[in-house]
Image (cartoon, rainbow, N blue to C red; front, top):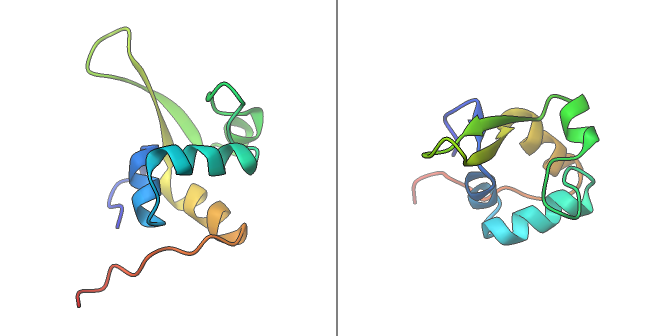
Amino acid sequence: MIHTEYATITQLGAEFDMSCVVMGRKLKQLGLREPGGHPSVIAFTREMVRKMQGREPWIVVWVWHAAKTIAYLERAGLERIDHAPA
């Protein structure tokens, strides 16, 4: 379960039991990422993504608004995994 306002593709993927690579492909299929991997105009227009500086000044990390992105993915038919304790 994501406990921050913004999440990486890795964190989003974990919510749906998929790798970051598979989540990245899903975001592309849904029009939220461009073929080259950058966020799409749709993602920016809906304020679903923002740029964050990585560990080094020249590294850019795109982080996704967790609530908006998860809701979008669920509306597209993806199901989140159950985080309830066993």
